[in-house]
Length: 243
Ligand code: GEK
Image (cartoon, rainbow, N blue to C red):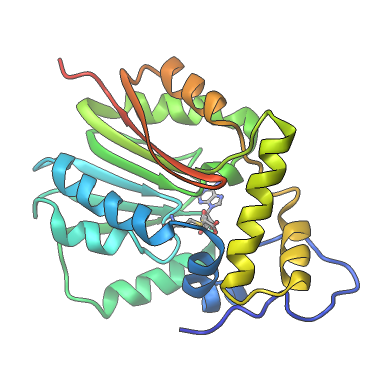
């Protein structure tokens, strides 16, 4: 695994963050050292998929990146389910296809390079969107969550994990401080943290837990459970009522 050094040298001007080949090369290291609790969220996502994915249904990994959730899920759910792994980055999708070609098959995986706002969702028993809603334009988020809810079967489960922010300024400052301390403890310098923060300023737009809950409720999910939080990262399980 290559170490993330993308923001290590001083930059004249820091452009917007993009999921290109350079990011793909270091992505597993980058996400593990940047998102507190990433490995726990991933492990629990796979457990939940095993629990809720049903035979002859579809499972969606929205913003699948390199398939960190897709691949283990495909080995743990009924063999006649289909996993749709969707990501808009051509570099991520090319690397994921190569990974799938080199790994033993679980159930069928359809790799789709598309904006998740544009895809159809149907016959879904389990949907995961780990750390990807934050990159969707805020005014497209309501429609996206409604589309997910509508495409899910009764009793289906949607796992949504996100970077979050806080209404209270002192809480926001404390959580940001703790997140930066996490990154420093994992080897990022102050310069790397500052330059990456600037690259993400216009592209990663977090919302509050309250806003996520409101959106999930409005979309018709009947049980909404925040199940994980570490500093400014959180995950929800949203379930659709059984008939
Ligand atoms: C993991 N879930 O390893 N449509 C589709 N994909 C998108 C869009 C979009 N509109 N916008 C961004 N992406 C993964 C980690 S990373 C999180 C997800 C992070 C994709 C983007 O190309 C990238 O692969 C992913 O969402 C976000 O568990 O880097 O913080």
